[in-house]
Length: 397
Ligand code: SF4
Image (cartoon, rainbow, N blue to C red):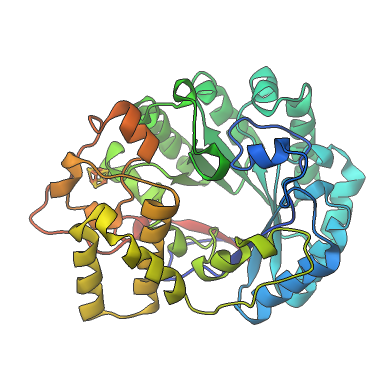
């Protein structure tokens, strides 16, 4: 497979879909968005869906939503019994398959060879930490050792891989070691993802939440270090103003996600995230091919976050009633309604307020907005790609 580095075209919208096969996993990460489902006995989203249903979803992503790649998640997709057949199916219909995985079962080299044979595009591996710290985070002794072996296997077989790291309190003390691990293993891309209060994590334990400022210098040094090694770095769900200007090109929040080709198409994601597309029930919802049905909800919630966003809507409506505008409104729906982000008094006069998600809602409640550093220009930035268009991205051809 060939890898290219490029600067994204303006207003490119991602065509990557996402599918959840069922919330069954071989690890127990405490920060998992689906932790309560994994722990439950009978939650309908827990069991894996049958292969024929998974194939039907893939077909809809490819031919109705026109997606060209897909992130396959479980829970843990490598323990889905028919995963190799599903990977082959995706590959054959032109939906490049990525597995988002802890990768521990890939410590078996023969299995890695099978994935290669079936046409896997790459693996997005959740590494989070090393050694005992990793084992404690994921609740399974020996897991880190198996994961490191798996990464060696992928390198042997020359299969591309990328890393996801959740920014936890535990990782702060190991950050330097993990950067050297990344240097030695050479992934294409590293995503640093703030520990989020999404889905079943909505009541996060305050003592587990790292402060944004604890990560400021660490992340900035990581960008310098890794970009020098030609490794792409993305920082997700992190307030823009916390990092210095030079590093804002790496920050992707809900407003920026649709312009990252590694991220998910809001249109197909809005469909696959619905109950019937995540369970083993025989029913599939009719696919909707436009987002305004979701946006109606955004306008219903307008009073919660006031006229700031209404003004954005009017400006965009007046100048550009385009797909980008629809995605922008969907980003606001996801940030302020679904995941309950908040803006504070410092945000009111910030030039970035229209392209920023703000602070996580529970974070703002616990710690306030004292870390916010509003940007004060004599104009307001309306383009969500204002910073990210200066980043160089990798692509697998
Ligand atoms: S709007 Fe608020 S959180 Fe966002 S960049 Fe400005 S001050 Fe920071």
